[in-house]
Image 1: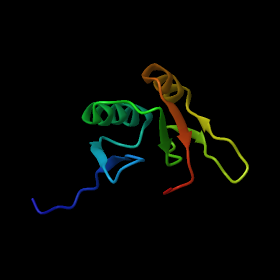
Image 2: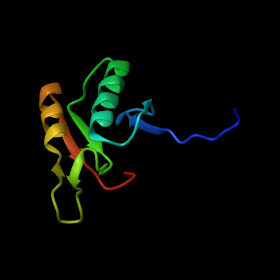
Image 3: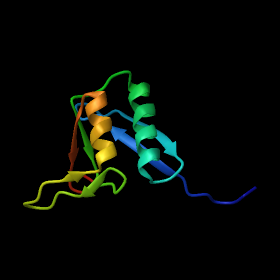
Length: 94
C-alpha cells in the first residue's frame, strides 16, 4: 500500500566467516528474541559453543562495561543452557 513499516530483525553473524543469518521478529521482547534465535539456529543447522549478544535488553539485564561483567535475563540463561551454548554480552556493535 506504499506505507513504510519498521520490522525488528535478528541478525547473527558467523564469527569465523563472512556469513550471516537473519530473521524478522515480532518485537524486541524476550520471547521474540528466543524464538528468533531458535529459527536462526535452525537455519544454520548447528549450535555454536558461544553466542555474543549486543547488550540487547531482551537478553541482557546489565550489559558489560569496561570493568563489569554482564548479567543475563533468567529466561535467556536457561535457554542458553538448554541449547548448550555460552551467552556472551559484548560491547555494542562489536
